[in-house]
Length: 145
Image (cartoon, rainbow, N blue to C red; front, top):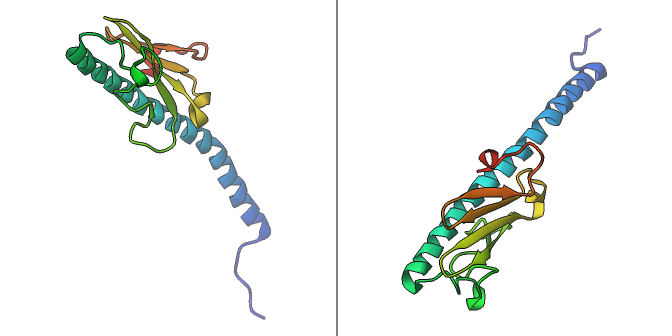
C-alpha cells in the first residue's frame, strides 16, 4: 500500500487563517499610506499653484482675475483645478478661496477616495503659511504638510 503525500484540510485552513490575519493588518496600513502619498502630491501641487499665482502677479500687478473666467475666486485659470495635476482620477479639488489685489488663499479639498483623509482641507496663503481645516482631533498642520 502506498502512502499519499499532501496537505491536510486542517493545515490548509491554518495557512488561510494566517494569510487573512496578515491581510487584515496590512490593508489598512496600505490604504493610509496611499492617502498620505496623495496628500503629499497635492501639497506639492498647491505650492505649484502658489508659484503660478506669483507669476500672474508679476505680469498683472494683482492677484485679481487669476481664477477661471477672470474671476477672483473659484477654479484657477493659471493651474489645473485638481490633484493630481497631470490628469487621472481627482483626489483633491484645488480652488482659489480668496484673492485680493495683494493677497490670496488657496485650498485643496479632498474628494473621492481621499475624502476620508484625516487631514481635511489643505490651505496655503501668499505669505507661505500652510494650514489644514476640518482635520481629525489631535492632527496638526505639521502632520499633514
